[in-house]
Length: 355
Image (tube, rainbow, N blue to C red; front, side):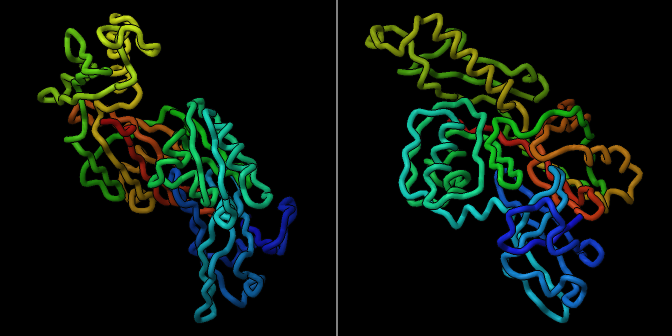
């Protein structure tokens, strides 16, 4: 049920002003991973409760992650119709301010607690993170949403700690992995109505030359991907791991240096992790599925199980002609809250940055 509430409502366990389901149309929920979370709709102005839809009203809407609250922003009225775009209640935080805090040498949850407590005025949101990484960040005169998600700012949470945002009404969670692998597999097909796949075959790396501190290299020089033979030739990249230091020469007495053989082991493992965890040996890819168009094809049966995935879930895409399976995450969707089904899903894989 899509339910309308007054702008200052704090109890959402009742039916508020009333339901909008009977007259609402063009209702769509859109979410991007670590990005926007919106609800848009149209409504007859003179239908029941039409005149009560106003700027700052709150609407409770079904989403893939349960019922979520959205706040109406700048509704437009024309020819007896209201059209409105609404932002998830999370965006109320854009109107707060973190004046000056220093989250020092802490994990993700410590940083989230510091940000929450550092807001200029008290708010109803609960901040949480399970990211174990230890980092520090000073945040000055930023709203909490900027502090969390602005990837252009070096000291934002996503840049210092990483994580995937899950917004659940007043719960704000930065999770190491928001989704999971539910075993969903689809096949990459060209020229299929309602399906589009874009694959960058220049992006994979299949042979790494790891370089440690002060020009430390492996005796064998390279670490190869388990799927190096899937490609016509090796794709080589020199990758620096400056934190791996051998206790040799001028560095022999450094506290952060390790024995030479241990340094070699760490270099090998760091390179292997880039293949196993970051999947740098897979091409960068994006896949978009439009269910309404795809439903007109015989192949729809092979893709309809995508209706059972959630944001940030991992999907395996089989490229049978290339002999490669690509692991990709749900990174965006459009959802019909009336029919309770996806209209559109985007799946993509994004490697962690490295030099």
